[in-house]
Length: 253
Image 1 (cartoon, rainbow, N blue to C red):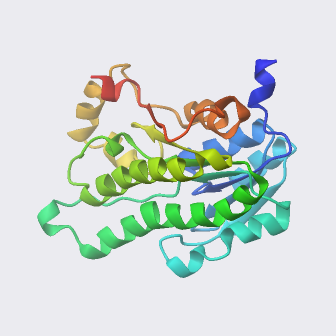
Image 2 (cartoon, rainbow, N blue to C red; image 1 turned 90 degrees about the vertical axis):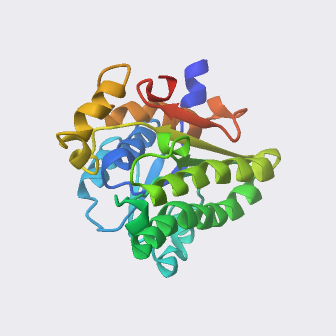
C-alpha cells in the first residue's frame, strides 16, 4: 500500500531548532508518522515539543546547544545514537536572522548567521553521514528558504546562507546518493511563526508581503509536516538534491 511507504516506524529523527516554529511542527509530524525524535534547542525550553512527541507514543530526547558555537556542535549525533542506537533522519532547521543595510551590516551578525545556517548544517550532516553510510540508508533534510532563490531586502547574510544551503544540498546529494543517503532541501516562504511576527506586523512590509503571495495568506507551520514526512520516508527514495519551495505561490509570481 502506498501509505505504508510514508510510515517512519522504527526510525529516529534529529531536528535542530525543534522546540518552536517550523522545527516544532516538523518534529511533531515525524513523530506522528512513527519516528522517535530528538530536538536541539538553544534555550533548552522544549517541554511543549517533548509533550507533543510523547503524546504520539514515540520517545523524545532534548539536547540543549547553541549551534552557532562550533564547540557546542561536537558529539550531538553521538548523543542521539547512544540513546536510540542509530540516526535515520536529520533535519537541519535551526536558524536566525538580522536585518541591516549591507553597508552597515555588523560582521558579528554575519558570522553568527553563517555559522548557524551553513557551517552547522554541514558539520551535523558530516556527523550523521558516518552512521548513515555504515547502514547504507539515511535521510537528510535541509531547511532553506525562498531566499535560496532570491536576494531579499537588507538580509545579505541570510540570503547568502540560504543560497549556500541549496548548493550544499546538491553537493552532498551528488556525493552520497549512490551510497543510500537522500539529501534534499525544503524552501519555505512566509509562515506564521514567532520569529516572523515582526514582519507580519510591520505596517509597510506586512501588507507588501501579503500582496505578493498569490494564495493570499501566510503559511501555517503544520503545513510543512506532509513534505517533511515525505522526504524522510521511503516514498521519496528517488529524490536527491532537490530544492522544494512551499510558499503559497511566491516564487511562481
